[in-house]
Length: 134
Image 1 (cartoon, rainbow, N blue to C red):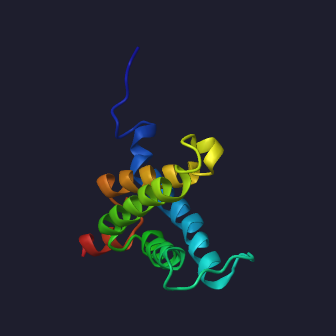
Image 2 (cartoon, rainbow, N blue to C red):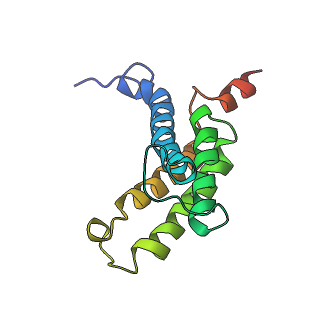
C-alpha cells in the first residue's frame, strides 16, 4: 500500500474547501440577517433594530457579508461564533436542552463552523488572502 503526499491527494483541495465552507455558511447566515432587517426572504417577524433580535440581525447581515468576501475573517468569525453560543444558551436551551427539540441545532452548527473558520482562517478565495499576497 502506497500513500500519496498530501499535496497530490484529495487533501490538496482542503484550502479551497475551507473557502467553500466559509462562503456557503456566510451566504445562508446573511439570509438570517436580511430576514430580520428587511423581511427578505418574506417573514412575519421584523424586530425593532435596537432590540436583541435587531442587533443580532445586523451582526448576521454585516458579519455574514464580511465572511462571504473573506474580509477581516478571523475577528468576524470569532464574534459570530460567540454570538451563536449566546443565542443558543439564551434563547434555545432554556426551553429544552436537546437541540433537536429546542430548534437550536443551527445555532450550534454556526457556532462551531465559525469557531473553526476563526482558527483555520479564510482559505485562499478571500479578500484577506488577496491582500496578504500583495
